[in-house]
Amino acid sequence: MGTGLRYGEDPEYPDAEVVALAATRRELMQAVGRLGDLIAKLEETRLGILPVDTLDELSQFWIEFEQKAADDERTVGVTASPDAQGAFDQLLSRAPQLRAALTGWRDMTLRDFGRARTKPLLQQGCTASSGTQRQSLPVTTAMIPVISWKYSQKKYRDHERRGGGHSIGWPPPAKCGEIGRHLTVTVAPAPSRAALAFCAASLLTFPSSAFGVLSTGPWPP
Amino acid sequence: MPMTKSALDRLGARLAASGPVANADLEELSRAVGAYQKVLDEVKGQLTELGYRATTRVKTTGTLVDKLRRETARLSQVQTLAGARIVVRDRKLQDEARDAICEAFESMGCTCKVIDRRENPTYGYRAVHVIVYWDGIPVESQIRTELQDTWAQIVERMGDRWGRASAMAKIRNTRTPR
Image (cartoon, rainbow over all chains, first blue to last red; front, side):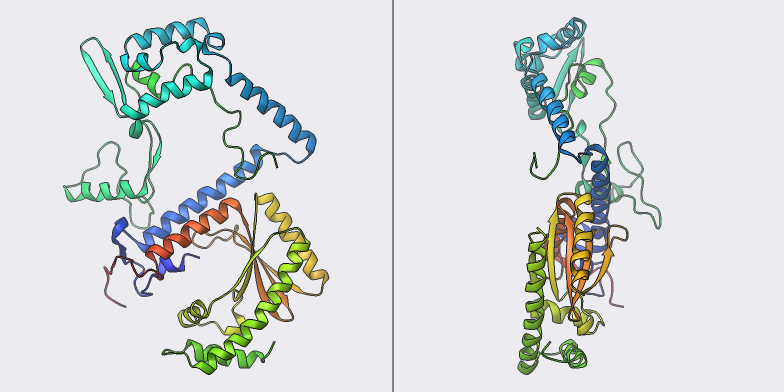
């Protein structure tokens, strides 16, 4: 497995560079190896999350899942506390783009509310204003944890060519013998203000499913 | 098997030698592969009886010659010449499949060798391989979970694009030959 990548057309060149990816074959194999490790962990975790061995357990799980799905159909005005609704109104008054997208938000189901709240942010970025300050936050890249091996490595090399230095947001250079910079997880920066915090993690965010991704297999089996 | 083990190894040595492959050797290889294919069909039938839908393949002449030239293995010892693959939902079913396959084939008098690549992954590849020796002919049965299979497919595609099989690979050698 992976022989073609490890050796390519030239067995003597495991360090040959795949120009399209700005990486050597060896680095490529290290990256996919890490992906394999991640999958193994995921599978081990999944065994613990969904221990459904009997039909009774499956039925119970299904009942709970349906109950949670029904909860998603209730409106925000019913499910959110008055305090949370008041706080949200205040936040909307300082975020005009968000306010426009969420007209009549109290009558939305939790599912629709989640979609309406997220869509304009993903499309445009979140702009919030307060007093004389105005800040834009590129939500698409800043708030979603991104596993970007190719992007981060190319950018990092460019950064090194420009003189280097370890700045915030960049991984430190890999030390000898350390697989350091080939797969970088970029995590959202901490929000500096309440309005930004709301964009990142809403007070009114509710899960849309009970247990996240259930299974890659047919469901119910 | 239409030839002895030593004859098979001599054929492997001729295939591994550099230069074009002789037509006589190709015909001999074709007969040997035919024997592997027959056993593979038998194994597939047994797997189907156990309730598993297996895909099968015999290595093509090109990939086999590549392997023999790349490695020093003898042809009779190449365990992956005939292979079957089963994909199951998760690791629990993977364990169950391993046990069921070993039990079924051992009860028929075959020898089974289990290679658990979950414990010892190679370059990130994880699966459980059961090598069934049917009349002395090895058939490798790969048991993968859906996610393990997805990973392997991704790596295969990357290999096609940037590895040895690619005519389009834009590769720049950054080191002088050893």
